[in-house]
Length: 122
Image (cartoon, rainbow, N blue to C red; front, top):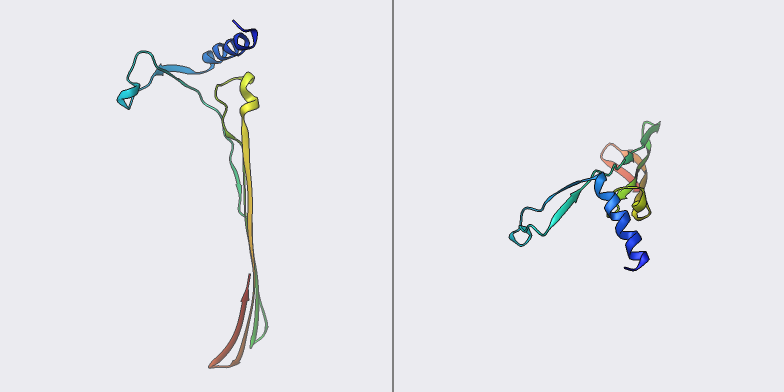
């Protein structure tokens, strides 16, 4: 046997002790004694931050200003799990990060009680 393949199979066999081996159930094509399934738990810490602020300012009775900011930041450093458990396969593990934000500015000017001039931008 090739030494590279033998080393990889040895690492896979060592990883089997870190999980639970069971039969595959479900679809009839997998109901076979020749197929087994390896189940293992891989922790995934998901961090989500949602900072938000809004400021409303009434400059005069006829002039109002508002500013708003919303952000969504998400981090999951171990979201993509490896094929097998154990330290030999951690190089397959990867994570995700995302960040999105919105900002808005508004001005409302009441010219007359029946006429309002308004600007909204984001």
